[in-house]
Image (cartoon, rainbow over all chains, first blue to last red):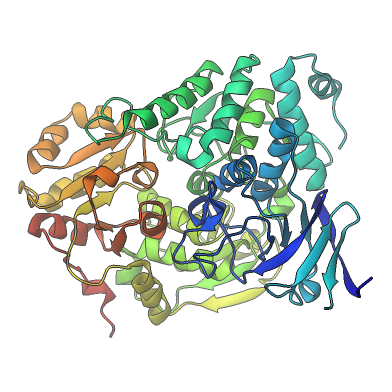
Length: 143
Length: 422
């Protein structure tokens, strides 16, 4: 088995997700930044403009702005265009609500974990990551 | 989380399946954020009633709750919907879209919510008192009600707002607790001329700067004049909650939890002190505009919903003149203010000038493809921030004077007097 670096964090929404990282240093407001039917970042003011978050491990420091972010994230989950997991420095309740309601309505989840800043800063776009938020850890491939 | 007997019963489904689902969502949220118990809230403001922000998933959520027999347990006001309920055809809203909005509106009305349809329920809705525990959604309303009124709400969003309304409960965490309302960052306006900090055009720009500077930390602001108006604070909060996660700000000598420096920081010290400069503000202002030339197709103001006093200012600036034929000028407000406009001559003056007034709604959520607009001008930082992504338009941020002059001349007039570099 290939070598993996294990980063310990705090699980917010339990679950397992793996894939390539898409890292943003900017905060994200899903409403206004994301088109939930396609998974595209549509805000021209955002550094991820034009990128697709579907199936990615989306890494960004925290949410911001509109209180409608959870609705858009829920819709992305419904449309199967959500990221495979989210890694934050701090997950605000508005962000966590999308996945919580998704569990109620669709029996589907979206794992979220928070990492301390030192570990968070190690993550780069295209890193291969395994998020296990129930075990409160992120595995980073050292390929 | 420790629940009361009544709350346990809700969770077991003794008060019906809707309450059970709502309680389950709230307890999960509470467990996640370290709440020890639930608190009883006395009112709610629901933001999940705008179709394009919640889409099919949000419609399914609301219709499911309504069909399970959900009823609001506390008075619950409603945020905007995605159409002017009476005049949507005049704004060329496709009927398929209006139909979706109607279904969502009906679901929340069926639950017993109040058809306020406004993003500014703190001005015309159900205004809470100081210290009251409430559950509000809509970022600008949260910022205003926490900061200016001193009621207590965490940042609720679509879904948790309705869950709180249906159960009359909210998990006790975040801004519901005194200790979490302490100021963290000290923002000083010592380098800003008072002529600028008294002007309406200062507040959206300063608010947007504030959100960028403090992100999710609570700012304490020194140097805002005591005469600051409710409408200026409204635009400050809306902008700060757009660029950052500002749910509470303190202004020394102005807001109720900041009568003194000691009170605002709860006896502690700021983590950071920021002396903002004119150049920084000016740069933020420039970045909020994306359009370069002088073309403008639409002037849109009323974010957050315009007050009667703000309408009076526009009427004054118009001076009886009619707007240019080559563009549209829309003002967004709610039914309360609209009824006052109708109760005076203002509605006729607005009509005669060529301005359209829209109620119940907000431009950033309207499907406007049919209009063929390319460039919009506004005086709102929140509109300016969202319009390029949600409507795909280029945008110009100006003052109210600039917006009116542009509407009269048919091309962008940048009213720059106060924003000229010295």
